[in-house]
Image (cartoon, rainbow, N blue to C red; front, top):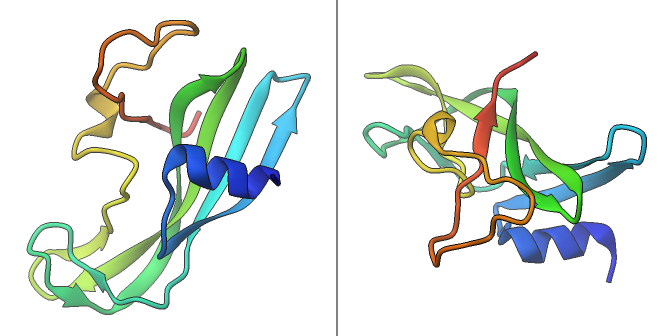
Length: 125
C-alpha cells in the first residue's frame, strides 16, 4: 500500500478531501501529511451552513497522534468561502472539532481511553 493511500485510510480522509503528499523527515523526526480539497463540490459557510462561493485557500497545520516516534503534522490547503452574512471564513475540516486549538495533544504511547482524540491546530511558528 502506498503512503498516500495508507494515510488516507488511517486518518479517515474521504472525498472531497484527499492526501496529496506525505513527507518523511528523519532529521526532524516528523511525518507531514498534505491534505487538499477537490473543490468539485460546493462549499458552505461553517456558521450558517449555506452554500457560498469560493474565495481562496489558506494553509493550516494540525498536530496529530505520532506515527511510531515521529511527530505527525497534517498540512491542509483549506478553502475559504465568502458568505454574504458572515464574510470570509475557512470551511470546517472533518479531522478537527469546532475548537481544535483547545484539544490536548497526546504524548507518544498515551493511547488510553476509548475516545478518539482530535488533532490540535498548530499556529505558525
